[in-house]
Length: 245
Image 1 (tube, helix red, strand yellow):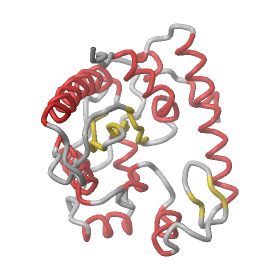
Image 2 (cartoon, helix red, strand yellow):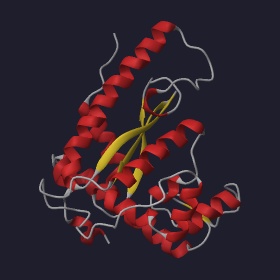
Image 3 (cartoon, helix red, strand yellow):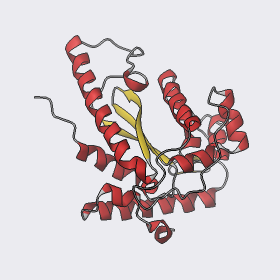
């Protein structure tokens, strides 16, 4: 009998992988929700599957994609009033890649002039609207619901890029990686890095190590709070980022 995908499993995966995003100290994280969902690009496109699958297996994968898609949309609706979004960015044979992000923080990363120029060359929307001056960590459901249409367009294009290739290098800009490290990764083809943590570092080692340590503190705090029964919406508006600096 096929086991159902539950909201609790999805929440737990997000909490394990995205604590710094929940606490507003990182713009985004990409995590894998493991399972049999078939392979291919974003939004259920299986046209790029490398090997044929039996019709029964394909139907089962489609049902699981539909179930997870519904849960992710429901979770997105829950988190949106707290300044956070999530969506399936790609389907893979080993699981679904889910992007959890804070739009106002991602906008700030993408508005860097050199980053914006590079993204434009890769087909992303050329202009983002002005960054909101509202805190990226609103204190409740009255907070801003979403960023502008241009950022939505960027996320949509990122999903298409995941469908075209394995992992597009520019996802690092969305995740808040330093631009110098994203470019260093491309120029060195992932080799000759100075140190490695959440990403491969090619420039500011000391600054990167501080950030890695802060992300670990965020994860410990969020896992502890979630384990004691604090709901996800409370974590998404928890004002603890100053306490984990």
